[in-house]
Length: 464
Image (cartoon, rainbow, N blue to C red; front, side, top):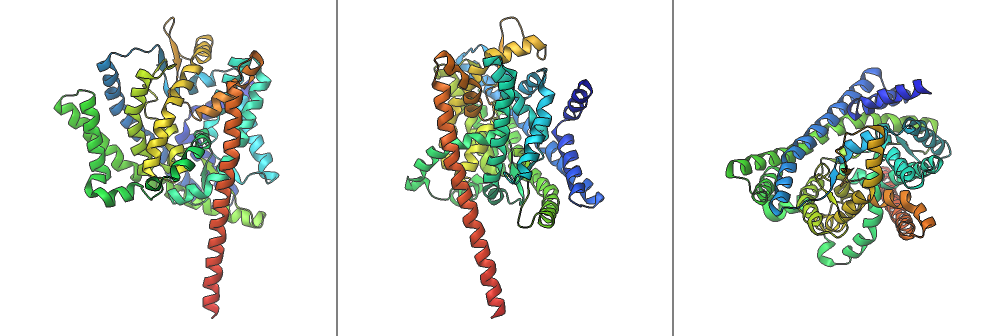
């Protein structure tokens, strides 16, 4: 058991940029890719992950000090330290049973594939820590390890079903076929879905308004580099930077927005061959069945709408943190909140106006959930020594992935103490997820029928 734990921990310690490409190379060889092609795809994927990580770190390093300066300007003081996702991952892996989540995740995926209950092969095994985080939360609330693994198992199933449903929309938005997202962050789409349905009823919000549409309306001012520069200047002014500091931040923001789409091309270059190989393999082994490759979100990072929503959400989150009743977390390490922007992007199909509204509505949720999770995350950190904290300090994350799901499913057993709020939230999330899932599946089926009709029509014309 200890040997298995050490092996798993070592592999995961390599990081996503190494671990996920290894999985992709192995999967490629299994489905019949040539060795050189599989290795090339794996290395290119590693390059893409590393490039995206570097850019996000670069962007965070540029914007976080400005955000902190904004808070210092108003003299705000909040007691909970925002450790970001990296700290939460470290704390989660310090749980004694953490390594057992790895075989649970693989086992459920294999069983569902064999039973034809999913078409997604989850290659994003590195993000198993997201399941561990949920399990740790359940243990913190209930003290029950079996319940913790039970809730984690439910999360794994929902991740696979969500990945199945989102694939068509993700392919439409990203242009990458045969790939989907198995990350827990997409769970927030279930909460955004009914709100977006209402927003679509407003004529002005139901029109195409993505980054390309913005370019048509304002020209050069919507170009990535110019827009990034303008946003950087705005942040510099809000942070009360001097001229040199403001211009530096502006160029940094322009650089980040310019390079994000460039990095995404490497994801496409890496994933297209493996997607084709997997598709061919499934056609041979299971006639009429399509296997999807489930990955983390970065392959969608070339969509400018995501980054515009992320940058917009920074001042919004800061403002909420100052005045939101019940918030005690100071947003810092999690201020670049991808887990807010990506669900808004998926549920709206990239409509910037609705994304901005959804990000405004969603921002307080992350602060409340981050505040709620602080006590037991701090307790685990202190117990295991995973993170060194000053006496009396609390730690959490202001951008917990899938905050509604994670809070509701980990706190649901509070109803035994008379607190029914988490149970009600859970029911609302599940109902909304079911309706959203059905809409996504109908959308995919309609698109497939349309493609089939086009093929038949083209074949008829050729015969004629």
